Length: 119
Image (cartoon, rainbow, N blue to C red; front, side, top):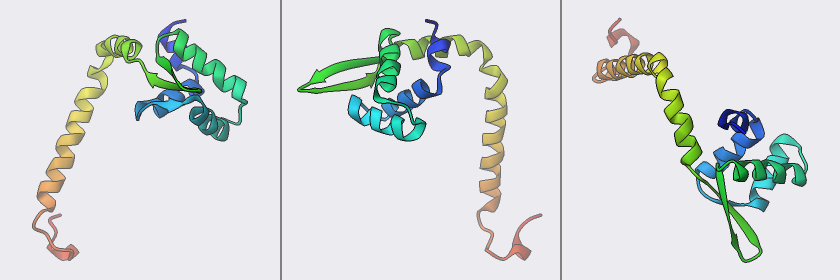
């Protein structure tokens, strides 16, 4: 399965979001996904299997629990592919950051009184 096929599913993307902040047990993942998407535990398990089988997640046993974590390899491949398109959003975001910084600089030194603010 191609990386974008794996990432194209909102449930799998949400699982990766959960894993991005640290490892979680399959039970923790299932609880969140069942609550948010209303799907069964076997359906969540199938999504976890797709992520494992395609290298996006790793799993290790800890006692009776299975702990999942992100495997960054496939995400690096996606990032490498996206590099050719990054120019379409990098410059506009850089320009936005400049404008935000300019606004903060201009905002320093003004009081809460709107009459003292620069127009």
